[in-house]
Image (tube, rainbow, N blue to C red):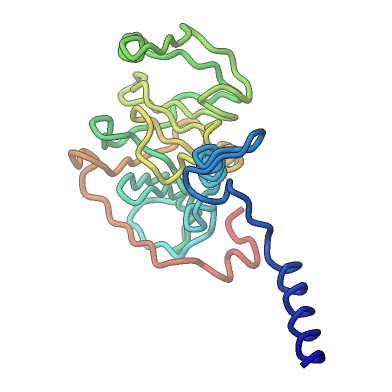
Length: 235
């Protein structure tokens, strides 16, 4: 019996060493002085999870069939993807964030201007709208890491006029894959830098979204191009 008791005691000690120490703070509603509450821990977890971008929204090369010429940008706002057409049935696919409900749009535009670390000039209508919510926006915010337009911006024009919509970076990468913007196309900073280096002024941009004003556009994403990603075809 003494032998079995020794074995049981050793097993209990080993188990205690493996399992985490449980405090009152580990249970809902319980708090301890100088410790985080359950709501605090939940908030930290939510903030950390927000920073993760789903794998499917990370830049990759895909097999892609379309009637559009190489160099064209196709924005699929429904599935939150932006494609840069490479040709030879290939494209580079990027994850994006798009306009929230009521701010979605569609059409055929062009890149009319480009800027690195652009300044942000919120439209007067946006400033008024946000002011009603108690949030005062600046008339102009200089470029930088805390600027909502991120590292790069491509200004979208139609008929030679600025549409006020942009393809730009973001200082909120966790919004990629969501409907969060006021109509602009958001990309992770490293992705918008990659696209910026390839999409020149004059690049055709087809935005597929509410209203179908882009007209008839044929394209088919056939999935990841494993060889293209392995050997770096298309840049």
